[in-house]
Amino acid sequence: VVSANAALIGGLIEACREVIATNADHLSELDRAIGDGDHGTNMRRGLEAVYAERNRLSELPLPKALEEIGLTLVMSVGGAAGPLYGTLLIEIGRQLGGTHVQDDFARALERAIDAVARRGRAGPGDKTLLDVLYPVHGEVLRRAGLAGISERAERAASLTFGMRAMRGRAAFLGDRSIGHVDPGAKSCALLTAAICRFLEE
Ligand code: ADP
Ligand code: MG
Ligand code: MG
Image (cartoon, rainbow, N blue to C red; front, side, top):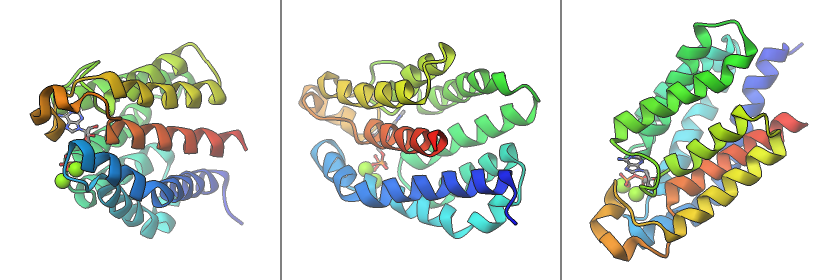
């Protein structure tokens, strides 16, 4: 018998691994245009490492599992995205661990996003995964529902097309970074959509 908690954690991990494996080539292609072409490979390595640990992780309470997933991402993704996604998960886990109120997910997410922004010295409009995270948080706050959140995430990733990169490797391109979707924003939208799809079922 699998507990509800274990099914939730295992399912989330599987959904994330699957969407990244399916889209890894596309993510690396986006990164070839404005970076070094490894974002898909980096993310796939990270999600495979998390997947390999799924049985152990599924036994943990959700906040602790999220923290541990974050630590695994920091250690395995490599590249800029590892510490940023890692910080996001570690902080969501820590914040959720400190409360028992379900509604505080929005607050936990907000604090975690702030931690990512500090870590990357980045903010809104800098053409990074934060340009997906901020609108996702906005939708969570106004209780948009899973379909609304996932649509908003996809739209937010598309909107990075017109932005000029201010952080990370893409920033070296200056104006030439305009006219390309940011790979980190795209992976973030894909993960958000995969999580929403899983939670809807
Ligand atoms: P690397 O650039 O080291 O090869 P990845 O290709 O895995 O790392 O990840 C690149 C993505 O990381 C970018 O598309 C962007 O979304 C995100 N990123 C890079 N630097 C920063 C930063 N300082 N703050 C926020 N996000 C960043
Ligand atoms: Mg890269
Ligand atoms: Mg790299």
